[in-house]
Length: 397
Image 1 (cartoon, one colour):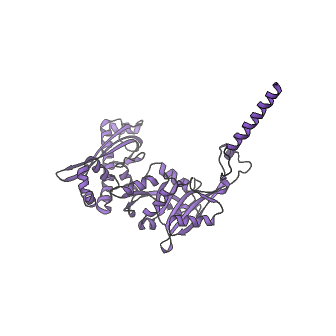
Image 2 (spheres, one colour):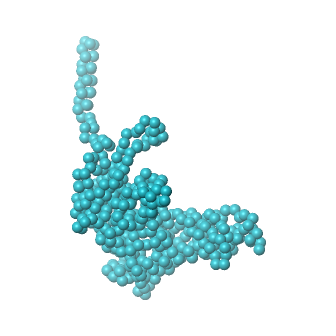
Image 3 (cartoon, helix red, strand yellow):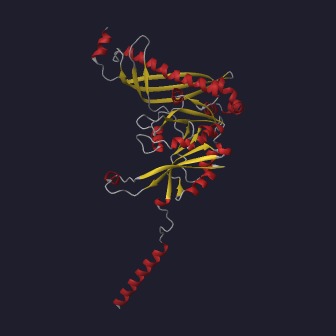
């Protein structure tokens, strides 16, 4: 009797195992990494006959070579990248033509940089951005930049420190030395009432004498868009001027000097907070840009003793002047030349005065250039470092 029960239990166990295996999911439809062409970055340029030229920086994984202990221990994989291009009536059409020329399936999941050539930017980018938002694979958090000349040329650049142009550009935009805009940010800016946007401007540094084949991509200023088309550029100094009102100034060094005094003082930004305060009185529109910043002294080559409170106040006053001078410079460019509200003035007026805004929103292009802009900047030097004997002697004189 016991033997029969044992046989039944064994049979039941085998039956359960067999049935369980029938419903378990397998990996029959998986895609191996060796079957994928990993896209690291993409570039869009104006092609022939109103076509779009799509260029992609493709990474091909390679198996590890024996003896590469460092890469193996860190989990890295060796590989190589190359740039491939194709033209089409649309981005989707160009991508299909690219796929025809590649033996591996295009995979957008690793793409973190999108470059737009300046000729295409001037023609208009709204239709191209539509592709990146609709396609399920590309990341909407990918950084978008405008390239001087052709985007394809920038993708082909070989940086000195990084493996490829995509890593170079990603690290630069993450350093917060300029504007940073993702696909999602760009779409939101273009959908606002003012319909303006600003994107980082990329240029290739000329090849060095040491290696005439290598060009290095850098970010140098910003490109301004209105109604989906590039309408102008901002210099490095002007770009820093827009970072303060946009509350995007995270890091930076400000160097000040004084008339009649030798040397200069360099200060590092510790933190900053900025706020836009709109006002409408007696039919006049105005905006106050309020800034609070804390800094520390990086270097002092003057004879001033920074332990002297009067010297600190003088330095803080000079820093305030430098910040507001940059903001005035960029406001002149935005209001009088480009008529582009990339600082978000329209949003602030709509929040505070919804009824007035509703009546005047169609006249915003006429209102924005006439807005009176004022500045309220407060600076605090928190750390001065140690004063050496030279500065002490200078203070005694």
